[in-house]
Amino acid sequence: MMHRRAAQKAAAAVAVVVFLVINAFVSFNSYDVDYDPTEISRRLDGTQRTIRARIIDSLRERRGIKPGDPDFQRLFLARLEDLQAQSELPTARRTAQRTLDNTKQIWMRSDKERENELVEAHKSNVMNNEGVWHNVEPLSVCGRPTNVGSRADLALLEHARVDKTCPGANSNKLLLLQGQQTYGQTGNNLIEIQHALQYARDHDVTLGIMDDSWPLRVLLPMFMAIQDKDKTEWQNKFEKEFCVKIFNNESELTEWDIVQWDNLATLGEGRGLKGMDEGYLTSKKMFVYVSQAPLLEYIAHQSKILQKLYRNYNTGTGTTSRTWESVRNMCSGIDAIFGEDSNKVVYSVLHSRSLEGQSGVKLMQRMSQSSGCHPTAALDMEPEYIKAILRPLGMLKFPILVITDGQNFDVIRRLVNDEEIGPQLRLVPGNATWLGGDVTLAVMSNVFIGNPASTLSGFITKSRLALGFGHSYSFRAKNDGEWVNTCGDTCVYDRKIMGSMS
Image (cartoon, rainbow, N blue to C red):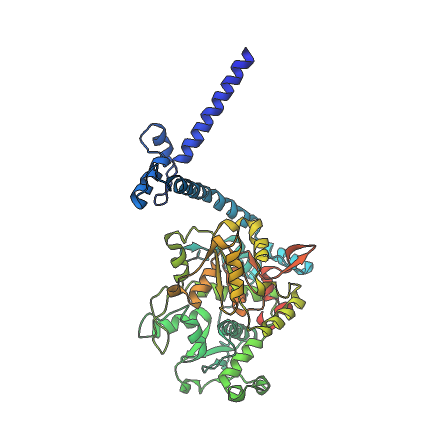
């Protein structure tokens, strides 16, 4: 008899728990109201309607359907299923975030010796930099926080040599960027600007930029927009931020000794009139320039440059130089997709880049030889390749966005038709799609899957490193049937792997 009573009490307890769980579940709000935990108590004391009643009211108001109608049962269950999925999202988001935090491996490298070097450097403190970076201001981009100013970020910046003066302060030697002709598209041009800043530092010369030249045409639509017709304040800020000198006309160059190279003619071979253009040749010279600075110092200095850019990203106010064109908002893509949820949403971005067909295949093959990555996987972006990255991170439950050059629609078709990826694919509205918006969308994502042979993918990965983000996947290959990383995020700076793209 006692055993029977105990069993009855246990069953009653279970029934109470089930009752509370069910009531808690049906107290979750519908689509247009945020979840409020106090609803549970209101539901239990009879002052809050059940979710069943709210779904019935919603179907009646929006569709004119009521209990007993032919479609009622189907629509009711569909709404209930959607609601259950919604109620599970916050938990899935927290789980995914923990997984992302616990598996962040920015410093992973294929070369064990260099991996150890980076790990030790992460722990060390360069004496002459001690305390210099400890007052770094935190940084948010489009309402999403970065890790700038965090302990890990400071450990990276401690390897940036602290200079009391700008390069070339004690000489009249000038590296001049001029003209409108450039080598390659925007991804190349961004590398050329970064290399020019590094060259000035490596060789202790002043970096000069003509006011009407390509570097400002590339940068100002995305960063450092001019806010006033009187450019004096903007010019002073730009020169101070990047340790450069802006020239408004050629008469200002008379006191300077401009850097010359003996091999510029070689760089211009096969390019016709363009190959004789001094601006184009200097642009190409900067692309192929490979710094011999120590790896850690190189990464830290380049990261400082990128952090300065993102501290001055454009928000839709201001203009470019000379043409005075209004700039766009770098947050346009994020805002268009996620709206007010942009600061908390979890999402992934894929960069699909064809690299102009067969030439892209050859470039990927060279990248495969130097890094060990698969020679075509980052070009094909097959669903299984994507899922092998996202599934272990719990990211297949969250939005997946594709930025693309539009040259290979087969990639999009395969992703759309995949049962797991397709439902999560999101498209940026046409009026919000542009280079700057796409770059920011990718840089601020929780997971980025790029192409190691794309200079734009490289810029995005470098930007993510500078902002303290991990989970940038470009170097992948199969090992015993499993997709694995062959090289870490910092490989984008490794001259042995990336060559002039480092």
